[in-house]
Image (cartoon, rainbow, N blue to C red; front, side, top):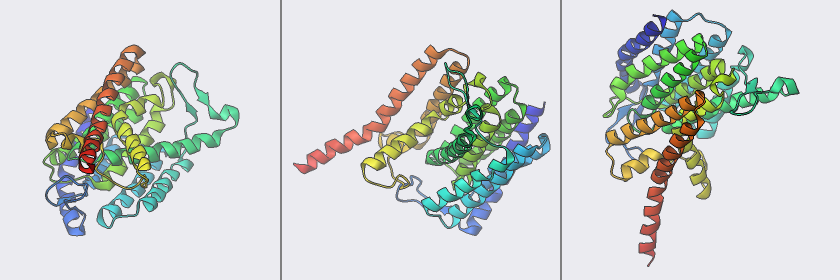
Length: 347
């Protein structure tokens, strides 16, 4: 009953809060204008992250018993939300934004957040404290959450894309947390799932509102923080591997983006039109078709994670090989077309 109430509260609050954020975005000037790497054709308010934040935390207040960890997550996520709102309104330089992300994650340290151990398939868990290396766990925690913040941020390129992917992720992480009886983490994941579904009523293409950096950074922060609270404490769910597999598509896209920009001599923080969703649109898919296809790819990564968690590694590897082959084919497609085009014009 608590699970259902948590999900329903997050959904209902998001449905009522999102129209309010549209009004606030117009009043504060948080508008995404078309052009450049953006694919939308008209100005869209981009403060929907505030509705997701409100729905998530109100549901958590009502249904959750707060402890030290949740207080740390609340304070840190509030900081990351404020940074995101400021970026949506005024825009912050990428390096300065990274500093704020690190500072927001640093807030978690005094509240007990740390990767005390890492559990990987086929080997015993590595406990850093046993080797006098507790500081490594703190550093890894910062890298982990900051990495997820930017991974989700990269995936926010089409109407409904980041929200839909994160909705799939939260359901899978709820399954994982519930499976190992991490009830606090499971409840929080359902609160986030409800908030995302409520927001998707307004964000699925054609979108009436974007989540903005306030939403994408908040989502990455919460998913990273909750995974440390519950999912990274045990080897039974493959620890670090499960969340990485579930987020396999945006992680792959981010990795290709870093490699692509490095090869071009660009800053890795410089935005471009080379992401997976751009390639799909350039290949002739409609906006909605591209989003649905990427939902399917994310679900396949989730399926591989579930199969791995159940010990069915052969099938998990088969699914991953098929999905990675599809991703590489999509990511390389436009590059091949551009090479042919440049050769024609050089003759």
